[in-house]
Amino acid sequence: QKEVEQNSGPLSVPEGAIASLNCTYSDRGSQSFFWYRQYSGKSPELIMFIYSNGDKEDGRFTAQLNKASQYVSLLIRDSQPSDSATYLCAVKGDSSYKLIFGSGTRLLVRP
Amino acid sequence: EAGVTQSPTHLIKTRGQQATLRCSPISGHTSVYWYQQALGLGLQFLLWYDEGEERNRGNFPPRFSGRQFPNYSSELNVNALELEDSALYLCASSLTHQETQYFGPGTRLLVL
Image 1 (cartoon, rainbow over the protein chains, first blue to last red):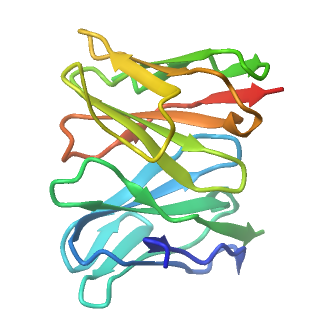
Image 2: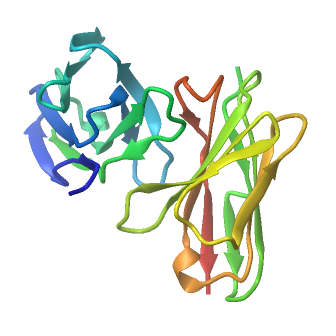
């Protein structure tokens, strides 16, 4: 079992729709959860991080964390073609130093 | 505030050669991490440096090594290059090891 799992996609949504990206993790000791966006050929760019159960909103982005289910998601409202990218979920333990990444979900937003 | 910088952007080497990649962290950040992203694979943790010391390394052979300088910049060295070392090498920095990591633009290494 992979430590961090994501559906590789592509997830295709029309412009203006809500895109829902999901991630599960295996280590119950994980404490910090991150979403990075990576455009083709570029480096990962931090979108959001979340530490506590529940929702965290930042503009069009909402991260949701459920530690009991070991599940974290990212919602993108009013999706734009410029949101088309690979979204990487990353997890870190409490005193850990390294990020453990999922393989990423490719999102395509159709104009 | 300047972000993480890396050089060179691209590097072409042949098998058996050595490659040196450089990274400058965000000002004030003392922790530097190196990750490898090979084609079709996810980001894999390579090395972590903090306060000039190597603190941990991922599951990579010893020919992957590096160091951190007093100004917190870092260097990744890959000896005896193999074809499968071709990848995007990403450097990230954080204020401390518990803080959020921010990535540089990466160095794309091609081994022929």
